[in-house]
Image 1 (spheres, rainbow, N blue to C red):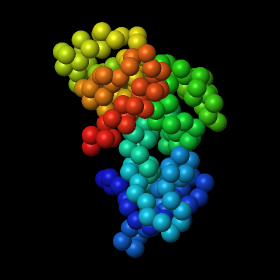
Image 2: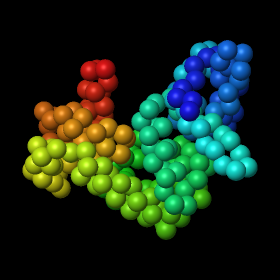
Image 3: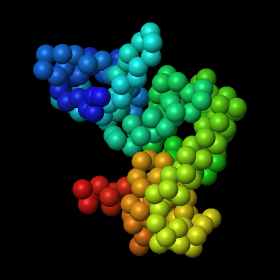
Image 4: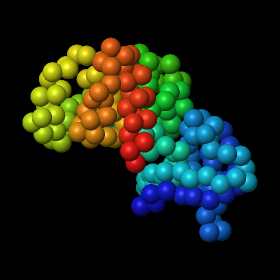
Length: 201
């Protein structure tokens, strides 16, 4: 498993970045967001990667942020969503907005992506919401469950659910949101929580 690649950017295309590591160029399929975040050709970049293996093809996917990689892995786990559709969806949204869309069940937001119809968009929301629930039930302790129950239906609970979509545990998400103003919009709570967790790394 290739966890990440770091090296000089030797090519950038509409959906690919080629990173040279130790004399080998790794072609990483990626999103518009990642392409805009990494530097220009000749500069150094680091991408978190996912190796997708099929009988007839092996492809490497790369992302500038771990949150984007987590969203991609969740998307391609959904029946009917392949890597191409996963990249397309993530090219039209940020990890924060993606998580918010799933957490709030706003499937129509995904239909704005070319090639994603209402049925597929609904399936994405339904399957990922189910996964979040299972993860919360298996990973959360009693205190966390009490915390979730106390804020159920609030902006805080939606922010926690969105952070879980991004790959954080229930405990990490609840700790990050704790202390923030619950009257803030969900997207702002997510942004501030991510900033707080990044500062603690």
